[in-house]
Length: 343
Image 1 (cartoon, rainbow, N blue to C red):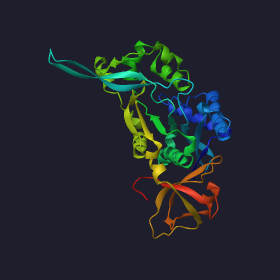
Image 2: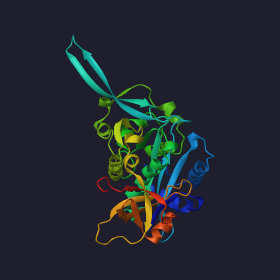
Image 3: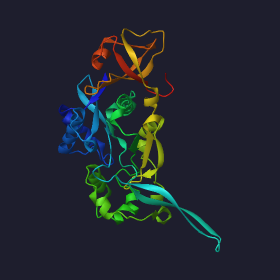
Image 4: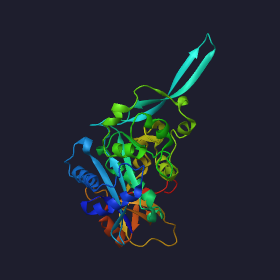
């Protein structure tokens, strides 16, 4: 059985092992035990009400109950950019026109932006490659929306997610090679790592402050603006199905898209609901549905992905499932169909 819960300090070694497998591109999960330990501590402080808004964040882990291993992580940041600027490029437009010369040109531009300051963020999604089956990836990603639906008072009105941009097998980004390297005396992986661990001052010091004309970039760079890394496409489609959309912002290093949504537009906020727990076997004659199920306990949050049945707003759970959720018959749990077409 797989369960999602808040990260604890006992998970550090397992999370570190995941970080060593993540590779270039997941800058918020560096293979650095001090940074990872501080990330867990931030989660505990947030849950205890001891963190100021700019420090608040939640790190979730996916635990395989059969062996006690943490095999995946996902996270939420409450509000980005409150102590250090939050940077991306806005893909905009400039028009150059002359009636006298009969010239009218619409030119795409990139402009350094802090427009997402104060947004909540979906981040740090990684699943051990050996566990990329049985809907584990969807479970780990979507449970964050169910948590937001239960505790939306702790989050901002808008939510964003930065998607990994295009890079090759050696971690080289064509966008960085044709743009970023001209302003930074470092390679792509180093700049991305420093940004991911919070050392972003160099961005403000070195990035151009004026619009960059996209048409002046080489084709290899133009072609990847707003494009998602092939390995990240499944995660991108999952977030799209939950209500997030691309609104013309991209990462300053690899040009991967930033997608965003109002909390009110999230499927989990609109469709999740509380139902009553019933302990018992499901009816074998009825087809069960896949549900995300959470106990809605803020501090001791626990969630499962089950194949269950609903009857008169009662959800049938096995005794083991109820035990893992730390609920008893008659209590309420929050549910959401794993897929939008399921009910």
